[in-house]
Amino acid sequence: MSATILVADDDAAIRTVLNQALGRAGYEVKVTGNASTMWRWVSEGEGDLVITDVVMPDENGLDLIPRIKKIRPELRCIVMSAQNTLITAVRATERGAFEYLPKPFDLNELIAVVKRALETPKASKRKPPSAEDDMEEELPLIGRSAAMQDIYRTLARLMGTDLSVMITGESGTGKELVARALHDYGKRRNATFVALNMAAIPKDLIESELFGHEKGSFTGATNRKAGRFEQAEGGTLFLDEIGDMPPEAQTRLLRVLQEGEFTTVGGSKPIKANVRIVAATHRDLRTLIRQGLFREDLYYRLNVVPIRLPPLRERTEDIPELVNHFLSLVAEEGLPWKTIQTSALDRLKQHSWPGNVRELENVVRRLAALYSQETITLEVIQEELAELSAQSASGAGEGEADNLSSAVERHLRSYFDAHGDSFPPAGLYERVLKELERPLISMTLDATNGNQIKSSQILGLNRNTLRKKIRELNIPITKNTPNK
Image 1: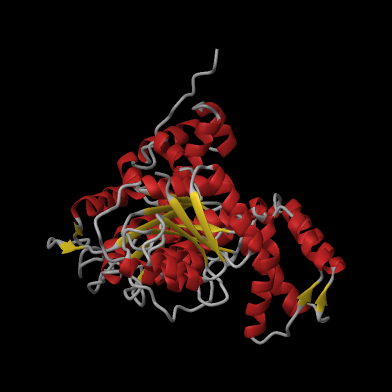
Image 2: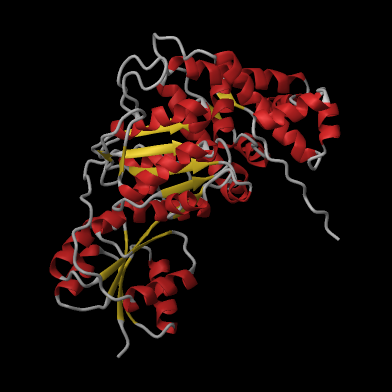
């Protein structure tokens, strides 16, 4: 016997399209424009599957789902919505929806979801994570593009789990925002969210930052210090730029993931770790694995659920909403309210945005602060983007040295900050030189295919000096075999 699908949507056109599409797929279909009729059908035992809109004239479709689940827990519900936000996806999942489909949706995808809902065996009954009815409407992520909808749906499925997540994407795409959303709307929301950027911490301090240290465990350790794992107990630990984690710390992190406990630096007593791990990187970890710089077993432990954040150039349709969001933020911060011309928005959509969402936000903030008129025009946007392009073009000269100097300064600042009022351990000068020397020599050797004569010429070093440094720094020399 054919399954009966119950459809509730206040849009007559959508009801007609769904009625025809589901009918052609071989299903019996009953359609209605309100929630009360849907509730009556379900109460009377009709239907094998429910498809409901969220916004209807008499009741919110999300509020209908818990009532349906209470009297017919086996009846699966598919939610449709034009309110294509992360919160809608999360609420649909928390209320017990089988699937969430943002409008407009592909009919073939809908039919596939319907088939899966009818054929997938019912799981053992368990209570879904509790939903907060007073959940704030401030969206942690902005955008209604197809790419963002896929991310929302993935995040909604992960909220009630403790699975490790690996977030990849270019710098400025919002990886930490995704990590925070996983925490703030997940079952660990009442505990602490702790973030650690591996690229901002000196390599010989990362283990101490992660796991803490005991008093006297190394020079300068004047007191016991709790690491990020202890600080995040019961909550979420976000490890940003995981590709920059040194090998020794990778080994210790893998042991924590395998055994669920760790020891502090200089300590011997195991400490239980009840923490969800979310990692992120803009680097290709598989390449690092092939280069011997990242552990493959750790990669598989962290990459249980991969999430790729698209660069802004792949979701330009989200730019108007992002711009209006940033304009609202700066207005809340005390700057005058601004509007932006449609033609100016169209011009922003044509830009490549190498710095992604972060770069767009900086541009909007700068315009709001420096532009005196109430409306941001196309001419203003063209001037701003022309200046950005000029800055990018000139960045390959002396700007690169400035960037390197700034990066080293930030690195050293975090090093000093990590020691509080005490001085860093002795030998800082030599340690910093080695931090810079090793990758510089290694990359030069790679560029010359291991040719030490060419490398010494590029580096301006005596050949014997280069050989000595290769031995002292334990730098491997690999030669690529040319293709024949």
